[in-house]
Length: 380
Image 1 (cartoon, one colour):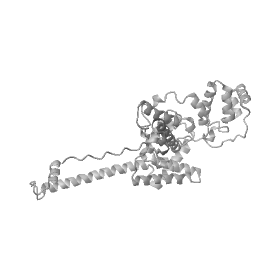
Image 2 (cartoon, rainbow, N blue to C red):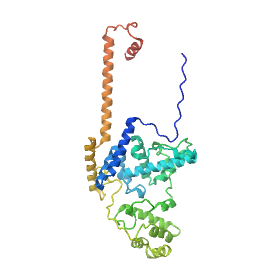
Image 3 (spheres, rainbow, N blue to C red):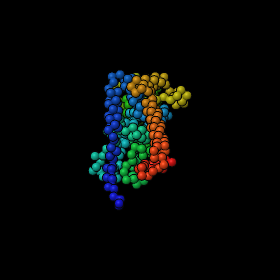
Image 4 (cartoon, helix red, strand yellow):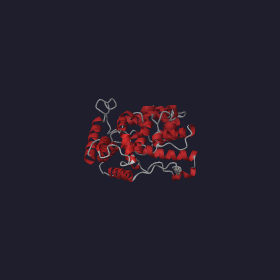
């Protein structure tokens, strides 16, 4: 009988995610509902505990363990954000870069219809969430703003590697990413982003002088001012327009002459200074490593971080039955695989004994079906 030719598969629409089964869709909707419930809690501490608990139930442990080491490497704007907030931001930048790349290299008309990811991070699959977290960790380790990272990696794959579609989240990291990002962000890109819109209020004038995160941003600002061809004009931008520092802080950092020249150029900073009393909390807050970890030994909020970890563990144990639900799930899956394997071996042994000692032990081909006999001979 001639073989019938199979119908060719319909090519998948670029940018369209794989169809999820009903259980996966229900799990995604449950994650969205859980995150919405946590972020509507009236108590800020309870919100933080709930967010850390959800993060521990969604992300692989390797991503949690890397947080203390990435704190001083990531782009300074992100150092007040939590792990979940930064991954959500990276997912949005990935979608925006995906559409920009598709419009440049393929069809700009279809850009508005593209949906490479779910509209929210919680609606993505667990594999997509952890792939985004892995790519985001690479960007943090290189100190890259997420839009620069996503645009550069995608452009490299499409223009240099001749890919036929923009990369998926699990293709956004690799050995080619660091060489392609060498020299980025440039001085112009740093200057355009420093103390811009959307930055945390603790960065600006009135922020704590003992905050290491704000000090890192001010150091970048000093480098940018001293490297600019017009120092007074650049300082006036930070002093007057962006309100990155007070006049007193400016005189301490740049001296009276340069500040006076900047005031003559841009005017006197007006408006009240909103002094911040909020304690500095790094982005790795709630994900500390062991007590002997070098990344956590000198952290000023180490005690509060450990208390947050314990509170999140108690919430996970109360809601999911374990303070490490992902590890518990992997262990349960391994136990289920072993159980299925033992059941299958028992069934095979029972069938082999029945065939070997049954009424047709001699192997009568007329009594035993051909398929059964083939299976019997295969097991011998």
